[in-house]
Amino acid sequence: QVQLVESGGGLVQAGGSLRLSCAPSGRTFGDYNMGWFRRAPGKEREFVAAISWTGGSTHYADSVKGRFTIARDNAKNTVYLQMNSLKPEDTAVYYCNAGGKYSDTGYVPSPVLWGQGTQVTVSS
Image (cartoon, rainbow, N blue to C red; front, side, top):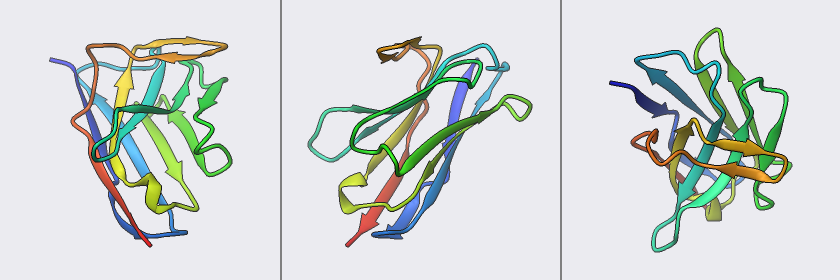
């Protein structure tokens, strides 16, 4: 059974950094587009960032542009989300998604391949 396992969340002060990792198990994901989403308390899930299967193209939500970077290492079968200059409004559970539709206009997540989520808390 294929699973996505996120790690790297935690508690950090505003202005700090965290790096999230998503490591699929059960198969390699070198040919899958990948995305990160988040859900803050009382809010809907929202898109954060996505990367094409080649790694040659990325998309970001306006709220994280210039602060977050998505990257992939297909040799390690891992996708990363480097988060810098964190703000309290970045507090959320962050989810990894695999196999969604990636285009010039954005990323539509796969309904099936979601991780369990990792908590990111940014204190002011």
